[in-house]
Image 1 (cartoon, rainbow, N blue to C red):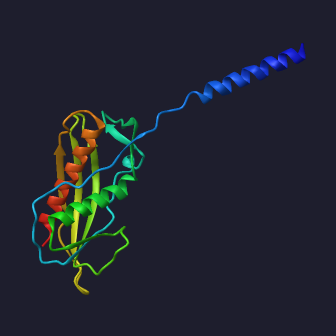
Image 2 (tube, rainbow, N blue to C red; image 1 turned 180 degrees about the horizontal axis):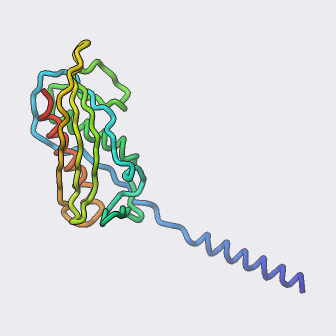
Image 3 (cartoon, rainbow, N blue to C red; image 1 turned 120 degrees about the vertical axis):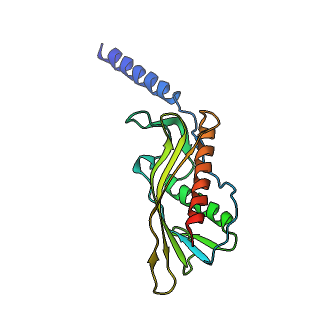
Length: 194
C-alpha cells in the first residue's frame, strides 16, 4: 500500500512539473522613446550640460505605465521599456536638444564625454504619463545656470506643462506621444537658454 501511495505521489509531482513546464509566458514587447524634430535655435553658449533629470519613482519600473485613473497606477501587461526610463528620457532629451541647438555641443551628465559647460540645465519632472482622459501629460520644472568661469548665475525656475494626445490607446501610440512630449520639452528648454 505504501509503495502504491509513493508511486501515486511521484506521478502527481511529475504531472505537476510537466504542467508547469508547459506554462511559459510570451516574450515581452520592448519599447523605446525616440527623438523628434524641432525648430533649430541659435544661442551664444558653445557647450550645454543636461544634468540627470529627476523623474517620479512610479515610472521607475520595466512595465510601461499605461493609465493613472484616480489614485491608481496601471502598467501594461507584457509591454516593457527596453532600458531604464530615467536614462532613456535623459538620452532622448539630450538628442532632442542637440537637434534644436545645431551650433552647440549638448552633453548629458550620464554620458562618457565631459567638457566645461557654458550652461547647465537642471530638470525635475513631476508628472509624465497618461491623464484620466488618455492624454500624455509632461509637467516639469526647468532651471538654467550660466557656468562661465567662476560666475554661476542661476536663472529663475520655469514651470512647463505639456499635453499630447496619443493617436490611439495602443502602447506604441502612447510611447510616440511620450516622445513628442519630450521633444516639446526640448523646445521649451531651448527657448529658455540665453
